[in-house]
Amino acid sequence: MCGIVGYIGSKDVVSVLVEGLRMLEYRGYDSAGVAIVRDGRVDLRRSAGKLSNLESVIVAQPIAGDYGVGHTRWATHGRPTEENAHPHRDCTGRIVVVHNGIIENYLDLKHELQLQGHKFVTETDTEIVAHLVEREMKGDGLENAVRRALMFMRGLFALVLISADDPEKIVTVRNGPPIVVGLGDGEFFVASDIPAILNHTRDVVFLGDEEMGVITRHGVSFTDFFGRPVSKATQRVLWDPIMAEKAGYKHFMLKEIFEQPTAVRETILGRVSQDSGRVFLEEMAISEERLATVDRVTILACGTSWHSALVGKFIIEQLARLPVEVDYGSEYRYRHPIVDKRSLAVVITQSGETADSLAALREAKREGACSIAICNVVGSMATRETEGTIYTHAGPEIGVASTKAFTSQLVALYLLGLRLGQVRHALSLADSRPHVNALLQLPLLLELALKLAPQVEEVAARFLTRTDFLYLGRGINYPIALEGALKLKEISYIHAEGYPAGEMKHGPIALIDERMPVVSIAPHDAVFEKMISNMQEVKARGGSVVALTTRGDDKLWSILDRSHDFVLELPPAPRLLSPIVNVVPLQLLAYDIAVRRGCDVDQPRNLAKSVTVE
Ligand code: AGP
Image 1 (tube, protein in one colour):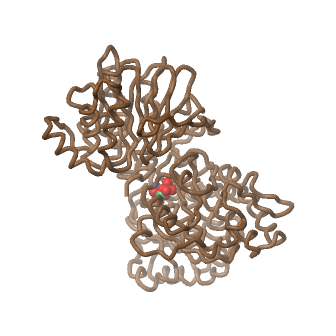
Image 2: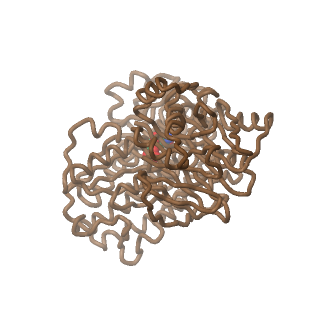
């Protein structure tokens, strides 16, 4: 979950590192630090809290140097203090390491190293790496010391190291969390994610698992952990640097909400034929014959991606007539799941790094399932561990609260549902055509949904001091109730629950009083009348209703009261696409409330964008 960056080249090292860390701050913001080498010495600057604190430290005590590494932390082992901030050092202060992940056997190693005389000054697992490498330095280069040290470590980790005793060299290894090496003109970068280096280069190499990169001013060499050369392909990243900037928006989250029409358009582009109705998903890399044998789909995901999975169940079951089960990545492997060679496991993950989702995927694969990822990050773990990937072309999502990745995932699931339906002959091309046409209209519907922004602000202004919210939806819009509630919780810290509207009377109705806003997702569909009944039940108990419905509604105001309630009218959308449209005002509502409450929208407390620990 932490952010790592390293640089060697002729630019101002500190600026490159700090700028890179700014682009990675979404990965963790409990503390930050840099280590710079100059004249055979390593200088450190670190600070608890956000990157801005580190910047103040650097202004007060400037440093400069020839090359260096930086880190922004999401605390796992040890409190978020300056002392526990990376980079960490060995006893001599000449070996420095930054780390993402967990060294699982660090306590045993620490004990052993302490007995050998090593002095520890932090509560972190990371510090043992510096001491282990110190112990293993035998005059044959930092990379060989790191290789020997690796033999003692257990866990999933990405590391970047420098040593003043082996100057002009940065060593990086990957055993789980991602590492990308950037190739510039006479300069080289290493980072845990592409946005950190996008301003400098788009030519990158993704380190594979159990691989090492040795970076000098003259080039990069790649080997496995045993020193055997590995040949790596350079990839050109298509993301534009501007995509990772706020571009005039107050927050990344707001920018990303407004980018949804584009993100969705890009995700559809080139994958459908309007004339034939055909869907092209070659990147799934699973043969038609194999797909035709699939008799069950298991979707594995966490958080917002799990909400997409719930919507995906409706889409795939309707379009492909295949049974779909959805599970939390964090739960799947703790039961004895029914999965075999005829199963298709779909892991949905924006980052491609979520440890729980990856562990669940591995479990399904172990039982023989074929697997695909729906993912937004090229080269990430999920894409490497599955047979194929349907990429969501949403561009970098920096706000911790997922928005455009979510709607793009739903589009990817729709494409998957159509494709499976076609391969299994559950859906003819003629029957596919209206779906394809509807998909192509989706960006326009999203533009219209975004026009609700001023009305949503009024809702936010009315309810911003409330302490609890209930979100209700039915059928395919029940997951949208969950997602609306999650968005509000994570960025405004207001307690919110999403519920299937029909279940309200079995418990949550006891919570309703005049302080409780109830957000009801009630498009004009088969369950509209039932949603009206639920809203009446809320009104009868004094609650306020915020109803999301289809434009042209004339029924709702007969049961709602203009001085207490709100109706937000959305453009008509086909049932399977309506969740994608309905979620937009809920994202805006969470955003507006959080901003009005003075919350840190892009970096909410305790959270990180990529959850790489189980
Ligand atoms: C979304 O707003 C959250 N921050 C979080 O629930 C997220 O969706 C979850 O951690 C899964 O992430 P992934 O899609 O990168 O796997």
